[in-house]
Image (cartoon, rainbow, N blue to C red):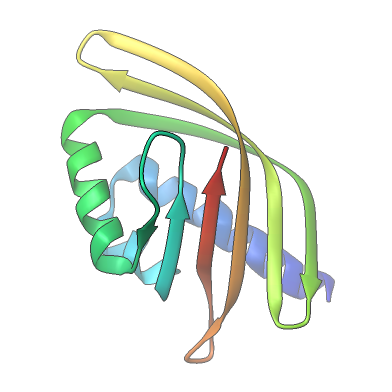
Length: 122
C-alpha cells in the first residue's frame, strides 16, 4: 500500500511541476478524462477540454510557482486521497501575490494508469 501511495504522491508533485513549466500536453496526460477542478473565484471545471482552455488562458496572463506540503494521504477502496497546503505565488506583469490554499487531490486508475480525477483548492 505504501508503494501505491508513493505513486499517487509522485503524480501530484509531477502535476504541480508541469503546471509550473506550463507543459500542457504533459499536464493533460496526468488527468482523468472525467477530471473535475474546483478553485476559488471560478465555476467548477470538468473534462480535459475545459481544463485545457482554463490553463491556456491563465498561462497567457501569469507565471506560477508552487510549493506543496502534503499533510495526509490514504487509499479508500480504489481511490487515492492526497491532501495538504499549497503555497502559490502568481506573477502578473509587475504584480506578485502569494497565497496558501488547502488542496485535495483524488486519484483513480483509468485505462490501467493512475490519473488525477478530482482537484479542490480552498
